[in-house]
Amino acid sequence: MDYDTVARDYDRFNSGFDYGDYLSRILPYLDLPDTPLALDCGCGTGSLMLELFRRGFDCSGVDASPEMLDIAFEKLSDAGYSPHLMCQSLPEIDLYGAYHGVFSSMDTVNHLLEKRQVKAFFRRIYHFTEPGGYFIFDLKDKKQFSDTTPQIDEEDGATLVLQKSFDGTYACQRLTVFRPDADTYRRAEEEIWERWYDPSELRSYLQSVGFHPVRTIPYRGRKIIIVRRPL
Image (cartoon, rainbow, N blue to C red):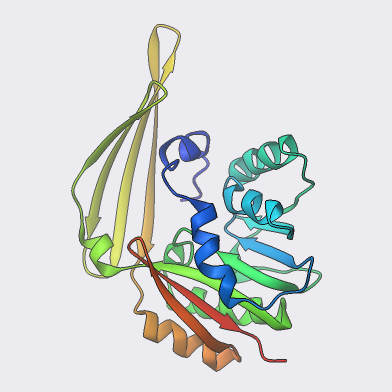
């Protein structure tokens, strides 16, 4: 469940997500230095990092998928940036410094299937957030998980077939991608599991490790949660 199989198709079928607009909803609530240090947890192909670099951040990224990190490195390098990328599991994240802004977008936290994993991630990320710095992440709403209508998308000659299920707690997305290859198609498959979390429960976890609440922002079927490490 690390996206390696479909990593090369991720951007193709997620091009409708506007990372610039996403950050524009968040940044007004952050009090940051002129050149803030940012960490993107679950950075994927680097799209959020690219937008952060453009806005003056010095960025590092963490992801569990080596293939995703390869794509992120290509994307950011081609844009003229020098990213620091690390292949790590978020509940076991181990870094060498602290950051003014720690981001985890596109329901990355929902991919942690056990509460103990979420608690471990929050505990560890607290120590890698600068005093006065922020941790920002989003969660899928239950309504979004409950929509299990199958989808078929076509982009650049490739086809994605998406089948979904949700039992009230756990959600599974079964992805099948058909990519054009000469006179035929290649098929790739992946199962992506996520868990629905009650935002109020996660806020209690955050407060238990020392974070203070700042803001919760509804955004496109998600809740963006902003918390701050006290000075």
